[in-house]
Length: 171
Image (tube, rainbow, N blue to C red; front, side):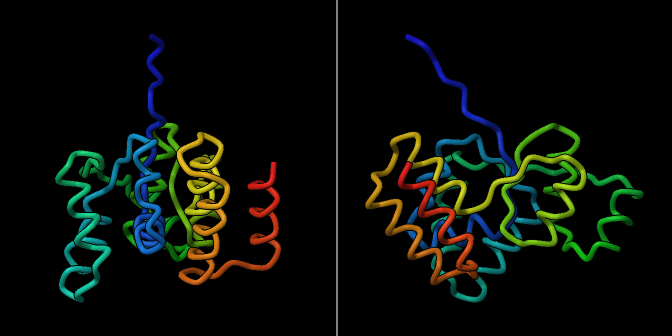
C-alpha cells in the first residue's frame, strides 16, 4: 500500500486560533504541523490565562502529538529586517523557519504573508487549509462552505477573497 507523507508546515497563531474557533482544527491533521515555542506561548499559555476555549483544545492537540512545538533561533539580520517590516516575534520565527527549511508557512495576517511572499516562502492560511481539506475529501462541500461562513465571522475576509474561495469550493 502506498504511504503518503504529510506536508510539513509551520504555523503561526492565527490559523490555529481561527480554525479551532471555526471547529475546523481537525483539518490541520492532514499536515505535519510544527509550532514555534513563541506561538505555543501566545496561543496556549496566554490564551488559557484569558479563558479562551480554543487554547485548551490546541493544548490537547499538542499533548496528543499532532502538533510539534519547536525551538528555533532567528539570525540577527533577518530579525532586524522583520522588525522593520512590523512583524511580531512569533511571525518572525515562523517565516524564518519556513524560509530556512523550504516549508509552507501557515499565516493569516497580511503583513507577515507579504513579508514571507517577498522571500519566496510558500504560504497558506486558514482558508487554504479549508480548501485543501475539501480537495483531499476530508470534508464535504457543505462542511467546507459552513467552515468558510464561520471563518468569515471570526476573521476579516474581503468580498473578493470570499468569492474566490466560493469558486474554489465549486470546482
